Amino acid sequence: MEQIKKFNVYKDKNKKTILYTKNLTPGKSLFDEELIVEKGVEYRAWDVTRSKLAAAIKKGISQIGIKQGDVVLYLGASHGFTPSYVSDIVGANGFVFCIDNAPRVLRDLIFVCQQRTNMAPILADANHPAEYKDLITSEVDVVYQDLAQRNQVDIFLKNCEAYLKRGGFGLLAVKARSIDVSKKPTGIFKQVRKQLEQSTMVVVDYRELAPYEKDHALFVCKKK
Ligand SMILES: C[S@@+](CC[C@H](N)C(=O)[O-])C[C@H]1O[C@@H](n2cnc3c(N)ncnc32)[C@H](O)[C@@H]1O
Image (tube, rainbow, N blue to C red; front, side, top):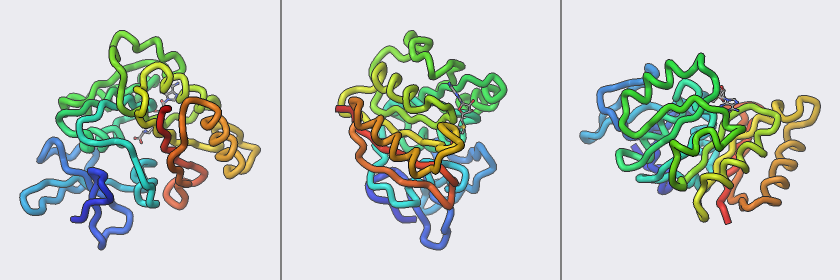
């Protein structure tokens, strides 16, 4: 197992579409993912075709801004798949607040969060950050957003404004077709970059995620 850059993420050169994280809850597989023990450490397989963060790492992104001990506000947590790997990356001293507005996914998300001490599910609309101000009472190190909404950049900026500390990282997964299905994804990504650059966020890296996620990109930003 080889560590990727300084990320708390690993790879096996023989597995092309799988990354690994150190399992925070050894012995427990949450999504039927493979568990591998090497030199006494248990790793969870992370399928890059199921996670935009893993796809961006696989595509060589230079920074993910998420490190051990970080507190992460995760918007669009769904069933908890990628959030569970973020939970591995931040480790026992970090924390992941998992927001989703769909009651139908919350049951699975609650199950995942119950297995871990560093994740909490929150049923709320990310379009209205004030909805969770009583739960997130101090600034976070990272805002991660993956939700397919037409105004996804506005939602991201509102949350970074409300909760992200200065110098903190904002990761925005963009689904071009949710913003405008009639425009080419490359044009949408340019438009998103421009909107980010007019805000308090500086874009530090960016990857288009094909072939793992068609018409998607991940922007890594830092708050000024
Ligand atoms: C593509 S899925 C997220 C997948 C997840 N990030 C992962 O990688 O495992 C998008 C999620 O965003 C949620 N969502 C969409 N609009 C939202 C909003 N305004 N507030 C909170 N969650 C939202 C949806 O309910 C859905 O579960």
